[in-house]
Image (cartoon, rainbow, N blue to C red; front, side, top):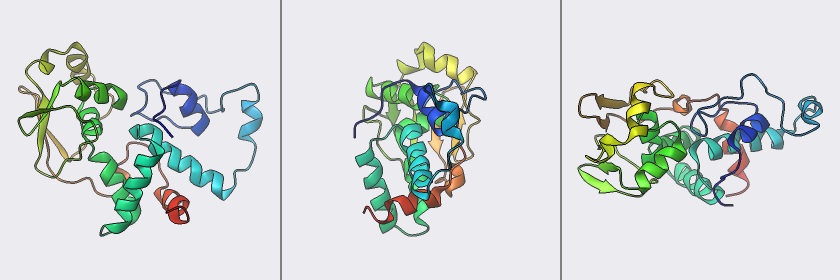
Length: 206
């Protein structure tokens, strides 16, 4: 399944939650699913599978990964040390496009991905164009000299979509950032998430 490029608020209404990485515009209290019979859909009791699927879709759409990418991340998380759910969120949060967004260089993850792909971001002093690069603690990243003049970056730094998490350090004058330490636990996600249901969803699929 490829990366989603359709209406973003429609997805958030279907999931009943604001996903800051997907869109800066919230659903503004309209938690009814889209469509003519959206109100009736809210009264239906979801099955356990439906709840698991919803939590999985939150991750997919907020972080902008395809189904195959998310499956590989879950497989890697299961092989690592510690709780699988915590590792899943950690691996997603360490992606370069997400860190560009969480630092305040871009208003959404799709915008951050485009910024990286166009060569406006550097990692440890070298320009990179791969949004999915995963950073390690101590890695430094930020806009290139040309990227610092990017109007979107300048505007977002003045009014970031989210408060910057404590695992990202930022030197304001130079706009250089650093992943000071790895994000810890499922609470690192910037939206309500039942990560155990995601683990259960993939338990019989991997």
